[in-house]
Image 1 (cartoon, rainbow, N blue to C red):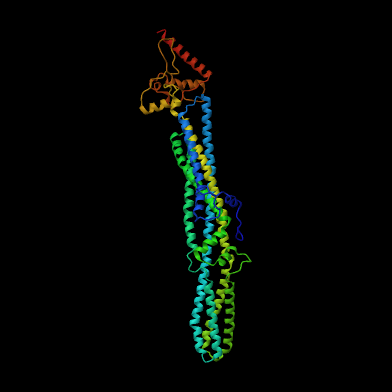
Image 2: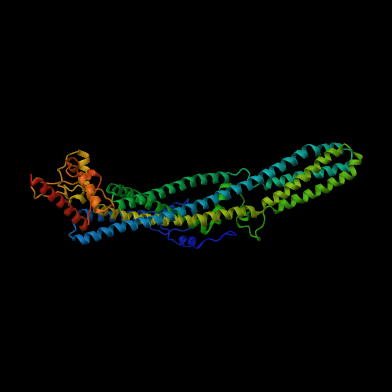
Length: 537
């Protein structure tokens, strides 16, 4: 198992890589990452089928529980029923809280996965920029060398046609320039290949955008169901709890399905991350037909790995040095004798300076450190952040599936315990003016109510008054005598007395024993005085 310099597989990669790989015939297959092989695909589908088996078990448990809940009648007493109802409600709340914790884990895992995939796309675009820069630099340099050969060096050959020694130098320079152009053209290893890292990065980014959005919607759906379930349990809203139970069943299917997908993805990703160099080298060689030495150089980037471009670069550098020395000799000897050659010689020297600058830039780009760093960054983003995010998403799906399984089993028993709020008024007196239900019926129908006997009515011994109705005095901090005088203003007013207490916007007054005694004595004295005035007449 070979690993790149700067990357080491994590412990969870090794752990998942050791998971048995079994095909549909229950035969053990190799754990090497080979997604194009049917046996390996069967192994991943078999792992995803474990989540399907868990889903079937959950559905069977839910069906058995609901059948027992609907068909079996409990013979427990009221105390045990109330305790069981409380236990069921709190079990629903606990399941929802666990689901909310799983949702938090899911948000973190989704973010980590997105960061890892973003690092992969960023590294691919950087590698594409490096490879494109190499191709452009080589093509520009080769084009410059060919243009100089066709124009200025040809002109110098015509000028020095009569001087053999100068003509030999110009022809040697021409051959060396053509040799440099040929060597540089052979270095361009990425030109015309079918693999474009930029296109691959765009495809990965497109897939990641939809994956991230899908998980965000799933997490928000789980969160909304949890919040509305808690609201329905707190407010005892039966229809809301029923709707959330149906939605929980739908999300249960999504949770087990996503868990199977994440399990297969985690195992497949661990197989790749345990030995990424071999797979990347083989697939790149098949697609691009690049030499294995070049691929090994950029993937490994060890000091003992031979640079496949070293020979061509060395020969090109020697040729440029020879060209420079030959042009320097022509400038000293030929220019004084042939002034017309000065212009073309300066053009060739400018070409030489530009070529040397491009050559040094090309040597830096061809060094394995730049592309190898992009490769290692992509591996770290995929195998560290991406793998960690997938594992957290797997944990979220597992918690969500268990929580919704428990909630679906508990919610029907919880909503059965819900009572209609109007039943709380069945034991109240319908003639009670402070009964909220009676008040609502009176305000809705406008039906008259029977006259309530006054709290202050009493029988007179004198016989001239059958009853004396005194209205309820307003609440005041005034002395008792003043309070009595105010209450006397409404005595004998039948219109005020016939109005129900509930429509007076005031509750019945509450008196202390001393106030009641003072009131009775005052009314008794008033009655005796009235009788004394009537008796003589």
